[in-house]
Image (cartoon, rainbow, N blue to C red; front, side, top):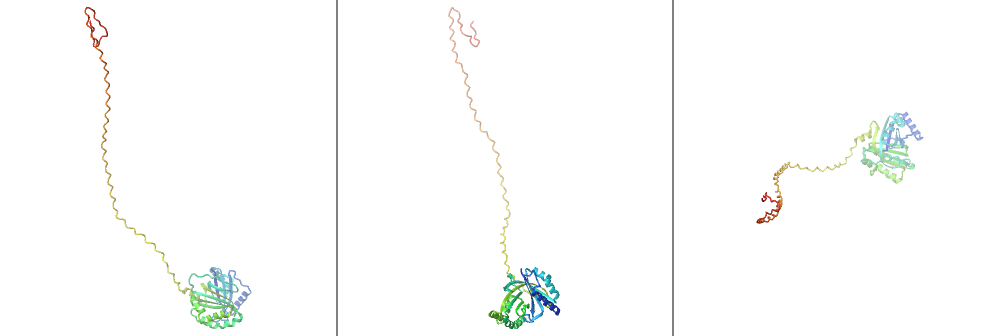
Length: 334
């Protein structure tokens, strides 16, 4: 996320002020270089509340745009330019910023890459930069005393400074406010000197080039006038009201499991009826044996015809014995 640093240095001694004037000249000649910064500028400052054309020879500043906060912090701590300025200065202070909106150009460029914040930004920083048309400079600075006085007594201003690249013609204002509402009331308040000056800027076309940007404050490094005003504002900011928590839907209560009915002993199985012993198998009466066929009666020989009665011996002749002797031991007739 792009990070912008505004570093302010105070040089109390005359020799140190001469040294820093030499640094500004070297910068104009292109002798300074910050390879990791995509855009950077060196400034002098104004006296009073900082928003005057009269130079303040004690306070000088460097603005730089870095690819991320880690690089910004490392370069402010280690790069040769910042080390030289820090060692020479009696006091130094750096505010780290993240652009949230920007409109306009600076030297034909758009140096800031805004990222819309996810929540309300508190505190808020505002930067305005303008190249004033030469023939409008007198009218512009005629408005300055009232504006400077107004911002000087505004109790809402956390921190402020007016700086410039070219005296009278290229001016930058930087201020920190508790919130966007208080800043808007100062900048556009009806009837206020700043609001009236904006109307004149638009009506009379005072500026050749202008840029307006707002920032979320990421942090600060060092002290200014023995304090850390921006850091204190960061620590004192009210916590953003949390969004009402959307309770996750409670899981549906588990269905009440009915207590199991007291276990009723399953009726003991009725013992299977003892099978009566099978009646002794009564043998089926064997079928009466088929009556034996009566043996054929022995063939009774037909009675032999009785021998013809022996004819009585004829009288006076021999007995006639013909045929076989009979059974039963018939005696032969003697």
